[in-house]
Amino acid sequence: MNKESQKKLTEEIIETAYRLLTKKLAFGGLTARNEHSFQLEFGYILKTLGQLYEFRLEEKFHLDFEAYITLNETSIKSKSDRARVDLLLKYQDDNSSTTAAIELKFFKKENHREPNNRYDVFKDISNLELYKNHNIDICYFILATDHNHYYDQNNYSQDTADFDFRDGKSYKAGTSLQYKTDTPYGQDISLNQDYSFTWDKINDFYFLKLKV
Image (cartoon, rainbow, N blue to C red; front, side, top):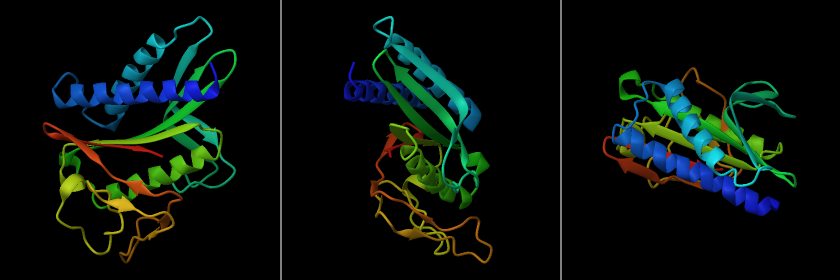
């Protein structure tokens, strides 16, 4: 299989796993109590699908949780040149291999941690952009929440309004995002790509999937 076909197949696995995860979570087929259990459930679906996509003996799908990758620059998230990826996938055969990184967020309304949660979303996206410069072929950010605060809140405080990924919003590459409180939660963030934020709403859950 050539590299391009392999990348398309890997994306198909991720996209299919996302659809299954969101529907099972929204309709009660699975329960995620926190981000860790959300990660485990998604990883299980990905691994099961990945193995089903091993059509030939030489095709192998591998999944790691909380895997480290080495960068040649300091990431905002880890504040070091080592980054820990929530889910790291590898699909390979005798001719080529494709690696994918997925960062996840799971925000429960009962554990409302604002506005720092919104900052952390952009921090994850920033890290995913770094991964793409370090031999990671495919990068995804996925967020699930039962709180419409992130989906369609009327407005945010001016001090943290830069960190906005509500449904229908967009980000322009190079725009500096600032935490304008007296004691900022983190440093300014600037991303390399344009982004459009389009959510999926299923029952009482809201889902954001972003390909970086």
